[in-house]
Image (cartoon, rainbow, N blue to C red; front, side, top):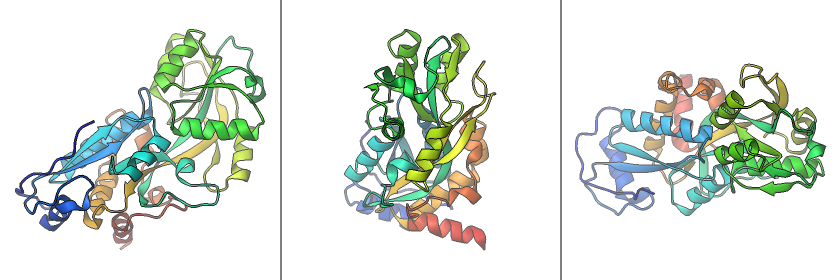
Length: 320
């Protein structure tokens, strides 16, 4: 992983004040020593595993922030996804990180100490994928079967374990990234794979284009999640246009949020929030279909996760 560095100051441009960069480089960002003359603020954004939308949308966000916020460079950090990203944020290994809402909010509504939200980005849908010839037709058929639960510490692991627990199903859980899981499913190493991700997701698109697959309906499980954990889940449908040869399938959706450490300067997070919403169109143009969901109306909806003061200020200013 790339190390954070601090250096001498230069022209900061109109969108980020000299005060912001000096504050950030002066030690408010974890890992930077206090130096009064700072040229660059180096931020690290935790994304996700290979084959995941988190990788793609995290990379697009990092590029836009680097381009639009003078003095700031954002480096992406691959990870297991949601739970792993929260761990790295709390440890100070990264400054920003993507997470599914359910992984960031406990059953009693509390959130990890020291973290807040920049915004809500887009919703992920829980996929339960099998090969077309599989005898699996419902969640109960996973009993004793070899099932990928996603990468360790991922949102997929978190949500799929909740689904299995609520359904009283004991599957033989395995832990691989989305790309690895799709390959293992194709080759007969797994009987099914869960994937909590944006629609369409690259790993499943590639699999469906080469081999017939099916998605198992999870409408009953969606209702159970909504009842048991209100605020984190919504019944949803994966459309028939998402994957080749796969009809529309009922499932559950989970919002994704961009988390940030509380100790990032207010003005810096304000500039990051502005970049995300002002330049959503250019992110969408980079073949990130999920980015079309990023908008001011839903962006403020982060449930019990408080907005960082910088993000909250941006949303307030937007209403004026």
